[in-house]
Length: 307
Length: 309
Image 1: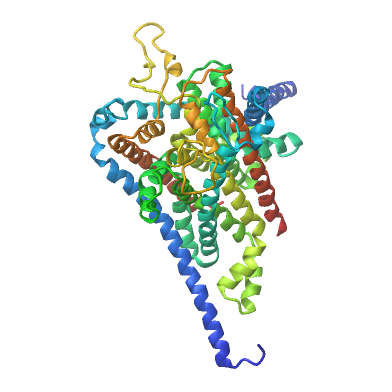
Image 2 (image 1 turned 180 degrees about the vertical axis):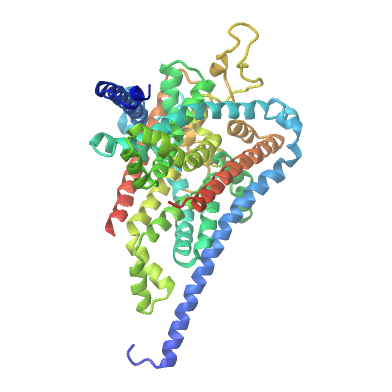
């Protein structure tokens, strides 16, 4: 080592630099490979599903004949179930986040809730399905309904919304809280008038990501028994008779996009698999759009926020 | 008039103060109730899984369950050996890790040590899109794109097989590994890198011999969380690996996983109180225990790397 000539040393440095460069190229190639997978997946869905993608496909009910089958019941079901999920998950998730960040900083109870949430985030989604089957479907007798699906998916995405809320609120500097307190604001006034408005954008981003995850979830809904032949829409929320508003739709059976896709992909006929691909293409576009929106929002927020 | 508004009486202030305090307390209670929903969820999961599993183990011996290699609940003489399902879970998860750990780690090292901040800002969210695609779509992709490709290499490969399900699952998990590992590596102080470079090490040598060991607990946490994710993954294996329980570790065969079995049973009608209804809860309990152990180890390791520096 000590007796190296300057040439040998240069040779050695050069060799090590080349190895380093090769590694960098490998890293870049692997990133491209991952992106290629994403691309191949999307393109595959569109190529296989293209012959089926038409207006008729969007407004037809599932059918025994593959060329007549469509995703009307599925996308309406997805929209309604997502609404239910949002109604439950957003208030509870945001409230939990506020509690953990602003109130429950001390004490074993808050620590327990915190550990619990990070563990819940790692529980497989199908386990939530078992919980829903035992609790909502059997014990509470809610049936295989839109209400059950909404409750199940909201429990599933709750940890995502809680974590997003906490991070958003944590990012607000303490000086803002102190300024509000100094002017005599109560704790809730500080939260409602200052912390929530400032963190709204980041919380919204988290909610979008959470809902996009809920849209694609299949396993927990299959577990509650949702894989059935649905060739009708849920009951309308408005009726012609008094009291004009009906909640019967909450209890109606449903299907959603990923379940419809699973139903088709598990059939042996190739024609149904084209339907599956078309449904998959719609699903991919929906999730990519929602995630794209979230990425854009996050980017805008990071640029705009300077405390 | 101006006088009466401007000068608050002492009692008036304290009265409004008291109302405010009550309101504040009420809000805190409501927020606490919201936060406890998550605890109730965990309690509910554990309670239900154990409740139904206890009923199951009254009819089936626990020993047979955890040592048996035959899973034939529908036979005249049924047997309930969880290993017939676990072998599928272990095999598909192992393949997924073989794909995602090297790929995720190299991408993480590249993004953390080599890439410019701008490239990293662009790549990370796009990579994370991989984890956002619905898993049933991945299932389709595995069954009708990757399997036909693999059949060109292994002509005898059946249409349902664990290899293609595992590979696709691995690709899905890559962003999990790369994001968490990269976070861990970026938490390593710059001074360590500077010290290493000052000694004449290249970027790669610094990354592998200094940054990687310093971030090792966070990196291993990401591997363990990836394993937990793979074990719990359902739709990819249910679509692409088959629904037939089969005690084998051969990736070229078709076999059901624990999760796929739950899906397969749920597809039929499930009256409560039947043994079949209870089997999915027993299988679910096995799954829950496995992922819980992995998650706890991952959580502790991830916590550790934050504390060192």
